[in-house]
Amino acid sequence: MRLPNNRTITSTHEGYLRLPHLSKEARKTHLFPNMQASLISVGQLCNSGCITTFDQGRVVVMFDNRVVLTGHRDNTTGMWQVQLPTNSATNPLQATEDLSGPNILQHAAHAAVAAESMPERIAFLHACAGSPAVSSFCTAIDAGYYTTWPDLTSARVCQDLKEPPTAMVQGHLDQQRRNLQSTKKKPKANQAYLLPGTDERPGELQPESPEERCNHIYVECQPISGQIYSDQPGQFLVASTSGHRYLMVAYDYNSNAILEEPMTSRTGPALLAAYKCIHQTLTSRG
Image 1 (cartoon, rainbow, N blue to C red):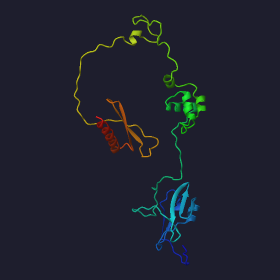
Image 2: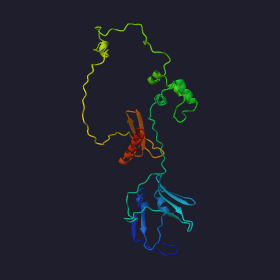
Image 3: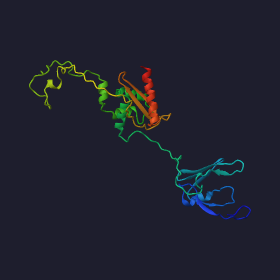
Image 4: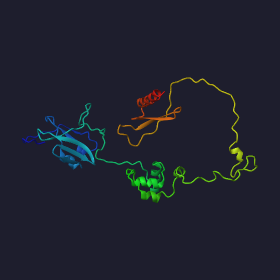
């Protein structure tokens, strides 16, 4: 290598930088014992397909839409300085393939909506809203209450929601059901004919009197083991702003209460902390 004072120096060793995303030609290096600092050849990187961008205070080297090197400009010397990946246990120029990291230039958008048809999607959104009446649902859509729901408009609801679901029919009845106060005589229980499609008589399907009770009580002693068995729900698709991805749900039978406690993971300490919060809530209320 020729220096600015026309003096030449010769390298003593060759190696490769720890940048496995680049080709072998781009990572090839030469070791000069008398040099006090390392120099990176921009031309060698560009010849291997890299894109190098310089601005007033920063330099970025990209390869295949991935940032492989970044650096800043030294205001004293005016040179750009790049921090190379090093390993204290090995030679920095030793080739290795353990460099990993996210591609900060890749952008992805994930949706939790399956690729169903438009009528199925409208029916799903209608059920998520509580299966309201179609007129009330369209009024709420036109008022702007569902602006964040994808592909939901009042016109599509009127077009695709032609057959109202059973939940809406049962929850929004305009008229009383038939045969509630019928004047027809009901068949007697001892009538000797079978119900259509069954081997039972009308009185056998629903007995008129309950089963005979008894006063027998059976007692069994159970040891207290102090163990609690649980089955946690699965992971949510998107974490909350606080980093919670799971929920511990508890049901108290006596008070008919459903309690939940968010968790960041399903490890032992996280489960124990969530259980203590739920236990403290129940004990504080007796």
